[in-house]
Image (cartoon, rainbow, N blue to C red):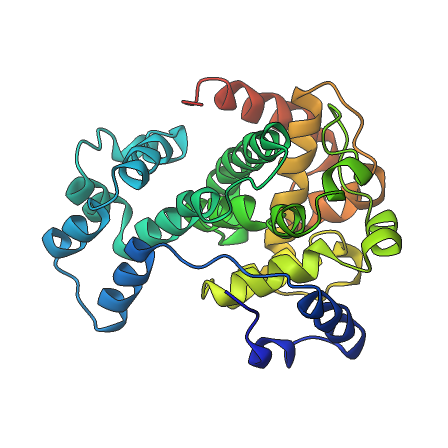
Length: 292
């Protein structure tokens, strides 16, 4: 789907110019799957009958399978066992389940047009960051008021501008070294080579999919936490940054951003710096018991 011009009004002048140039080059935002659109329509109408909502979700077996995998996370350990879609809707909550359904639907909306290996590596990374973010949020919910379903949604979507650009530019993956283990997009190089910003593109995808505004803002600013004011989006970015760092640690790779944001992240999440190593160990231990 082409970019809605109304979305451009939410961007700065510089960001708007970049996106307009990408529009001219034919970049397109992924459409929401039919199940997600139907579920959104039902919720907008105020439908709360879990039997009706479960029937809507169950039209897509792939979404159902992915929903169950997320629901089996230890982030929802107090709600187990979750044995049906109706059961998930009742236990986790309707809005929370909708967030997860949106998250698990994104990969199918952005299929590989070329370099399938790099696309698969991207989604493996995104799902890992989302699971880690969900566990961090569950541990810090009383301090941060960010819930596991919200963190999972942000984790899946935070870098979704990358596969959009991969779809549009056949050289993007190679130029950004995304087919090399442990490498990730360099914002300066991305801008220089493609006159593009995956954070802005991801923000547009989030708005197009009608994600909560604070999650859209977190997508847009997840590489720019230090310039953000006090806001739920800043807390979400802190969770994302810690989840990304945990992913790097788990892969035994260097995280180029961590030293600059570590103090801000721990402060935002109410973690004493001395307690961080034990917190990291606990989250990674839980992560390795998760279904992957």
